[in-house]
Amino acid sequence: MMGIEKSDLEIPVKKEKWLKRVIVAVRWVLLLLITIHLYGCQQQMNQSDLEEQFRDEAVSIIEAMSISGQQYEKLVALCEGTGSRLPGSEGDRASRAWAESTMVADGLENVREEMVLVPHWERGEEEAELVSPTNRSISITALGLSVATRPEGLEADVVALSSFEELEGVSTSLVEGKIVLFNYPMERTDRSMAGYGDAVRYRTGGPAAAARKGAVACLVRSVGTGSVDNLHTGVTSYQDGVQPIPAAALTMADADDIEQMYRSGMAPRVRMVLGARSFPDAEGANVIGEIRGRELPDEIVVIGGHLDSWDLSHGAHDDGAGCVQALEAARILLNLGLRPRRTIRVVLFAAEEVGGLSGGNGYLQAHLAEIDRHVAALESDSGAGPLFGFSADRTTTEGYETLREILKLLQSTGASELRAPGGGGADIGPLANQGVPVLGVWPDVSLYFDYHHSEEDIIQKVNPDYLADGTAALAVMAYILAEMELPLPRIK
Image (cartoon, rainbow, N blue to C red; front, side, top):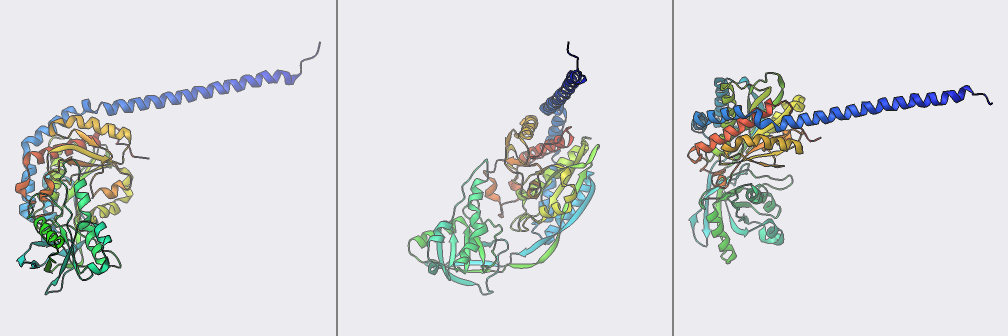
């Protein structure tokens, strides 16, 4: 009988040890997978239970807002008390002082102004007349950041075009020394700003495009809906290496008349005077106040709007409404004793209209060190119409589902729908670019562009009930995002 070698005995022993290690490893892997699964289930359960968890608070907020009326009183105080709020103007300075004192009176904490530089542009004289084929005055208003004409004005024939493509198709010789008119009508929409986005290209880019072909001035059909005799202003953009030319909006009625003359071979001719002036950048500021979080004060939910407005009116819809909604949302939460887990930071941004987002970019630069602790940013900057819901971006599929759960609590305000991805607002765009989840209050805008950037954007055009609904929806959404156990997830 052969002897058993020691090495023969070691083989099964090694196999047994190896098998035990495999079993232990498998158990740890299974335990880890079970833990992850249970965590995910708990997370899903926590998020899907938001409707039940926050029903009482949502009802309290909505009821308190419906009987408050202070949001409309605040809007009257802002619009009538400070007037138009073009960056660098006296109205701009007065509105900042009003916002700061209002925050203090409402009990917000850490109230302050954070300084930013803003463009300082003034409209000056505006005058125009149709010289031929008939002689009559026409109404114009300078586009923001337009250069001036000579003091005596300029006079030239008008080339009336309907699109950039038509401009590209005509010879430079036809345009040189002429005034180019872009007569592109805006489509009225209710659920999106697609009509505005399509038409506003001619206001922002039309003057530079006309200048590249040798035009001496540019007129643009007012970008708006509503009255054909209403003037709508807005900023334009010049381009490096292209000589800036005077640029103005004219009424829809005058734009149609002049184009018809041009198409009929009547050679319309216009004389115009613009006294617009640009000054060195002025001192502006974002106005900020907070409800400090009770457990995680360094984690932040931003709510706000932009404090500046165009100078043709008081900017009641754009964006006085958004500012007072943010202010009143914070006040009502404090009055109800609803101090959330995280900080809610009210930010009234500077210089959205003329300033190239001076306020939004300035806020980002001032708070870069804490951007990772911004769990969400919400803005109201689409007027105070009846609500559809919220638009949202920069979160995950699970995040959108969480927001839909919250919207179930807002049925009574009209805010029942989520447009995703759908953006937030211009001022919080810089935060979105850093990965912060953003939301925008989403109202019906079918009437908004009747008033937008025009002398019609006044307090009398704001419906107090719709203003209250938007305030309540913003307050509930901000509170839950600041209070719920897990923050809204970011896109990785």
